[in-house]
Length: 82
Image 1 (tube, one colour):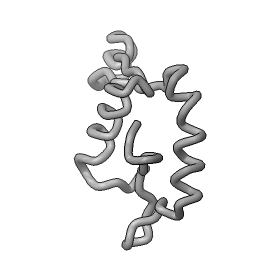
Image 2 (image 1 turned 180 degrees about the horizontal axis):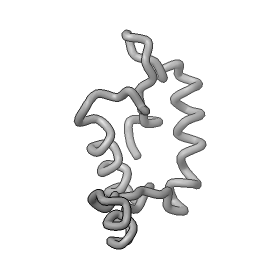
Image 3 (image 1 turned 120 degrees about the vertical axis):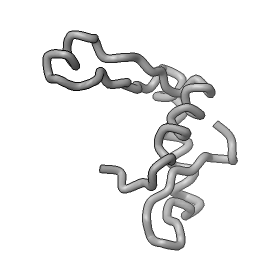
C-alpha cells in the first residue's frame, strides 16, 4: 500500500522504535492460526512519538522536502534526527 521499495519500511520502523517513537508487538498466536497464516507484528506510536511526530511532519512539509526526484513521498526527519 505504501508503494515503498522492499527493504524501506521495516528499517524505518526499527529506527523509530529505537528512538522511542513506536513500539512493536506480536499478534496473538490464535488469531493467525485461525486465519491459516503466520502471526503479524504490529507497530503503534508511543506517547513520545505521538507528541513529536506532528512537529517533525510540519518541519519536513515547511522545508518542501516531502517529495523525491521521482515525485513519490519519502519519509523525512526534522533536523535530521529523531
